[in-house]
Amino acid sequence: MTADTRPDLRPSYLEHRAMRTDAERLRTLVASARPADADRLSALAAWYARYEGAIHDHHTAEEAVVYPALLERDPTFADADGELEGEHRVLADRLAVMGQSLQALPAAAGGGSWERDLEEAVRAAEALQEILGVHLPHEEDVAFSRYQREFTAEEFTALGEAAWKVVGARAVVFAGPWVLDHATPAERAELLAAQPLLLRVLYRLALRPRYERLARPVRTPAPPASAHPEA
Ligand SMILES: [Fe+2]
Ligand SMILES: [Fe+2]
Image 1 (tube, helix red, strand yellow):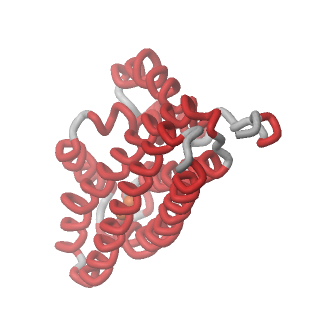
Image 2: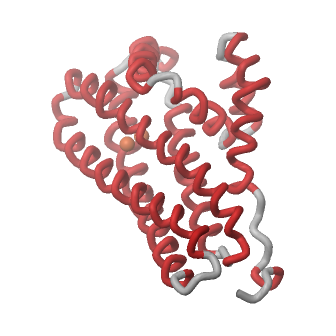
């Protein structure tokens, strides 16, 4: 296979980058939360539901479409497939725990359970980061390397299209602008240029503004601890 017929894995790496970066932001935001941040924490929980959904969609695409196609081409992927899917289960559990912890925080603000609930949320965010730190490099090592070897660019694009059919249109609504948000300006320009005009217009006029509103609580730096009134 010549270099120019190999799959373009940049969007896959970018999605992993988005997961990692936002898990780190989430941990920092939760660790610095104060009872006065209740509204911000509610907005963060709304954003988090989309983040969690995007990771579920990513796993569904991998397990329903991409891994089985790879296994057919390269049966030596079988052991790694089992390990990666096991990591997806752990990740899904930790995502759910994080979501529950985050949802409980606004109501706990100012109450007697605040310190304990906050500590749980910080631990949940750390556990999430930990499994992402295990799974993403593992997958890039044992699966992405095989995608490069086993599929042509055309075949990998067809797998991406099949995956979109499985996860549905909601994948575009959040994951599209989310992935672009984590791209460098040059990466973003290149990725957008490859999209149909209609999708580019939709992104500028609707998807990106909607995403910006949702992502505001993750973006705004938390005020320094000294700026918070004493709880
Ligand atoms: Fe992945
Ligand atoms: Fe994965």
